[in-house]
Image 1 (cartoon, rainbow, N blue to C red):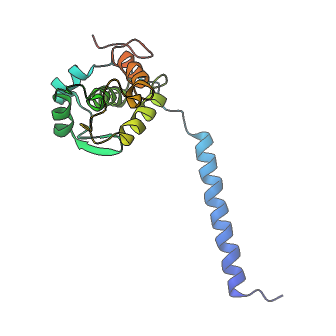
Image 2: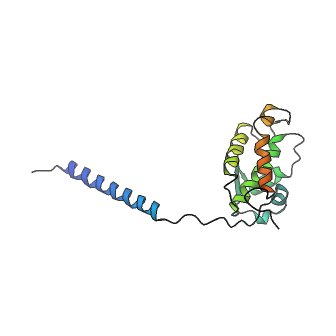
Image 3: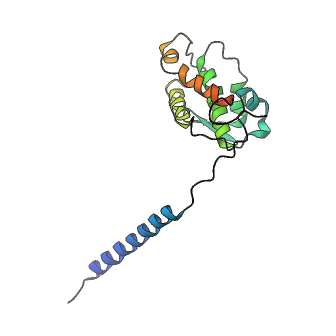
Length: 161
């Protein structure tokens, strides 16, 4: 029986792909679960805007927009004057940083994701979302309240000492 070069190439390629797939599946099942959260304690927006040395990152993404640490801190120090995008930015940035330093995200990750989406819908920061708007009352405020509770150590991670 005469096997063509193309057939041999195809058989070898499929064999290699199957081998890689089997190894990857094996690694997925054999790998250890991630370590449990260390829970060093959550910080409020006030903590994070006044302790840049404690930030675990030089860039943070809020509403799918990247901000340098200095830009984010500057926004956090800006009085919102009734603009709820500042309120959400502050709480969301603090929650993200709290998770990044090792606090338990199990009770807040979905809210972080939803608040991040909210920020993407009403960005940029300073866009003028008012507290009496449907965007805030119906879509944003409950997310903010849960982020605030997390940042103050009232959910699945303790507050900082």
